[in-house]
Every structure is written in structure tokens, then in C-alpha cells.
Length: 430
Image (cartoon, rainbow, N blue to C red; front, side, top):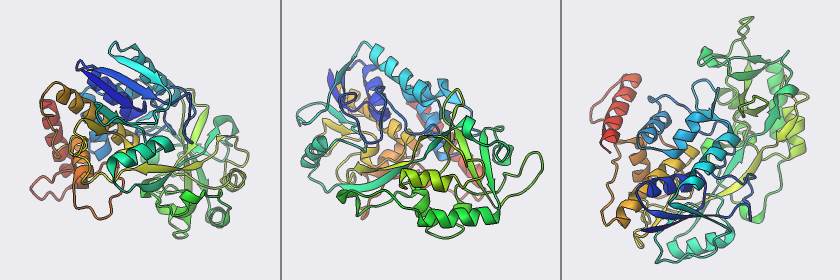
């Protein structure tokens, strides 16, 4: 049994692992290091843009439930993430370099996975194929996918937050604490008075953004990765109800309350770099240094990475893709990852997990055993494959797409517990 996979991101690596563990010989194609997307720099597979890419970790949160489902289904990505964990309160954050290296080493060591480096520029519709090229698919391959799908492509824009060195943060102004003390003092907090916040707000909304390419001008901003300057322009207090929310972040030594708080999250295992939480941005680099330097504690911050914004591409999956992520017109060809419209690293990896399983079953002459939408992982597949969506948009996992319980439960915590229990019972059967 032979299977070709295009793309060695989280989805592609997970799909390769799942298929190979079921006896399928996999050829995993990756264009790095011959060619890089605008967002990726490392030669390793499964490269992450920010440390906390795997988000909340409790099973009574939709993404936390999804991660636990993946663990029970034998996920490579979750195995490596758990080993490479760094402190982040109630979230699962990883050392990006260590995580990508571990995934790469395991993929390369698998006896049934061959690696083929170089850009893929053509698609053979007769191949047993998983396209996990990612939302930053190369232009040449994008053209071939467009020909294959015969569907209009959609575009949205994703943004990455800047990273600063720990030594450059003024800790006489900042303090360590997690919101409500949850998970320990894992975050660095830069507090603002009302006057400081308003000065920062005015500078941010008037700052100069990077010049857009022609193809970027009719942009759709994905709500979950909104640039901080776009958020600020929605209203003076919008940021204070989002990433600069001060609630639960009183100073642990003085008890002082603040008008707004900027949080920084550990980005690597050695704690030498910190990510400015929620500060995805399209500002020019010089403007980032100037405006973000107005944040108390970051006046002399050393930026090891400025925020960037890039085009993400995804297919109009409803009507094109089945619940097993295969094409309706070409059942031998599957799509996986963010290009399908599942948004987020965890969701992307989960689609690769299912795609690898389903492709292996089909190659073995069996109909894929579809995991139902009563689970988080099955609900994502159902969402992207459901027809009748007039304006299909990328979607993070959430309780709203999981099949309802069938009874009304007013207590949100109890409802989450019931959804999680039902889901994990189903997953255990698989």
C-alpha cells in the first residue's frame, strides 16, 4: 500500500504517522529547505509560529477535549507536545524548537516513511494522496489544487505576535502572575494606568502598517488571529476586554489593581524569550518597536521577532470534501490541515490524525470508520464537510459545532463535563 503526502507540517506529519503505523508505505513530501513560506524559518517539520499554539489544556474546554481525544487516538503531535511542554498556566505551551525537532526525528526514524524534499508543483489525480500543504501553500501547487477542486479559493489573513528577550524586560515595572493565580506565576504582566493605556491606544490606532501586496488588499481578518491594531480601531476599550483585560491580575505583592495589563508568555524552554500575548500585528517593524515600547516594562525591549502578517489560503470545503476529508470527486485524494478550513494548530493536527487513519483504511479495502460529531475531532470534520454554508469561514473547535446532548443543561460546567464524558467514551471505542 502506497500513500503520498504533500506537506510536513503538523497535519502532514500526523497523517504520515497514523498511516505508517497501520502498515502503509508513506512518501512525505516537503518543500523546505529548498523553499520556505513567508512564515517559516526552520528546516524541521511541524514548525510552530508561537509557543502557546496548542492552547487550553483542560478537558472541559473544547480545545482541551480535542487534545485529550487525540492523545487517546495515539497522536504523534500530542506525544511530542507533552514531552516539550513549558510553563503556561492552564495552557499547553511548548518549546518550539524542541517540539519540531522531536516530531522530525520520529518521522525520519519510522521504517515505513520516506522523505522527499523539494517543492511539489503537480498533482496526479490517480495517486493515493493527502494534500496537507498548509494555508501558505506555494503558488504553483495552489494553481494545481485550484484546477483539481474546480472551486473558488477564499483568503483570510493570519498574524503572528512579536517576541522579546527576557533580559530586556524591565521587571521593576512588570510582575509575574497568572490570571486568578491559576497555574502559578507563568506569565509576565506589564500593568498600565488609564493615562498610559490611552496614550498607547492613540499611538497604536495611528501607527503605520506594512504595505500590502495587491492580492492582500481585499482581506478578510480571521477573528481568532485579529491584528492588535485592527482590534484597537473597533473601540477605545476593545483591547481591555480582550488581550489587555486586567481582571484577575492584581499585583501579587501590593494588591494593586490596574486599568489594563499586557501579558507575555514564555516562548522557549530556557525562558530567554517571551511572546507578547494577543499582539499579532501588521505594523511596520519600526512602528512596532516605537508603539510597543510604550508598554510599561518594554521601553527597552529587544525584539527577536517582529510581528508579521501573511496570506492564508483555504478551500471551500463544503460540497467538496466528505466527512473523512476525502474529495467527493476523487475519493483517493484527501485534504488535511488548515487548508480545509479547520483553524488552529491543534485542529490542523487532528485533521491529519483522522486523514491518516481513514486513508489507511481505504487503502486496506475497508470503508473508513468515521468518528462521529458527538466528539470534538469528529465535529470538526463534520463542520468542514457540511453543505449549505453560504459563507464558509475557518473554524476553531468549539462546543457549538459538537452534536448537542439532547437535553438542556443550564450549568455550563456540568454541560461541559457531560459532553467530555460522552466524547471520550466514544473515542475509547476507536
